[in-house]
Image 1 (cartoon, rainbow, N blue to C red):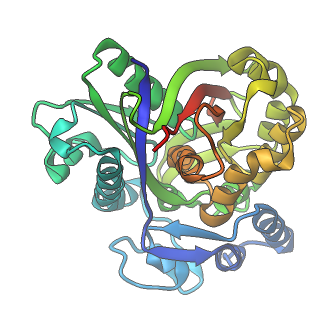
Image 2 (image 1 turned 45 degrees about the vertical axis):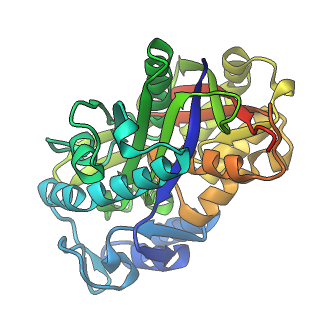
Length: 364
């Protein structure tokens, strides 16, 4: 049987903050001259984001963080260890919330889970999120656990590929894939254009999927095929490194340009006949990336509407974002059984990950 995403669950931090609020806060940082303030305004306003969720209420003017990140309008720069401690405190509950929702929607029970695959690039500790899911959800103590770390925005696709291969090898396997990213923990108060762009798009969120063998009675998304491609350029244009004051993102203007130049040939090779695709799930690394993909592949504006809507409501939640888009496609009543879905995501390298999915919606 083909491996199938049976359900997707999502979770968000309680704090929701307007993009304009974050823009004004970032532009008010000491040492930002008028040029930097104009760059902040331009980047935040062009991001096509209305709101984001964050685990740090202080970013929205609230209180209650264990990590002090703000003194008035000044953003502080805590050391990496303190930021990671906050990740260790706040990530497990989001992993658990999204996973509970996914399991509940799958028609399975927690004791049916045989494998756990966790994904994150915004924190690390051991025993890690995979271990905590076993404890928090009451999963079997014999469950096999895997963690994919530091792969970046594209990581949901390798995680689903691993789940598909597990189910392909063992048709009785039930795999929980869970992604949680807390990008707000790593804001850098720098006027460098790369850091301004990163601050303008990244957000926090969690998503999980249950993958198992599909049958004629279950709805979901069949995992039909996967592909990976490393571009000739971009190794230094999208990078994620550990610094003394948090993880540091490099995201240059070359990223959307590289994608725009190369995605047409890459997509044709990785996905096949694009005219046969009924729906698209493209990771919204930023509005400019979606614009380049849409233009290069000659897509109708409606094709990337699900990606743009997730970006508008939530920002770029790194690896979790793609599962939000697939969740919305699953819930779209206008979609019919057999619709073919193309999935694209972009990660450090510059790496392109792709998947081919088929929507299954059995008649009632």
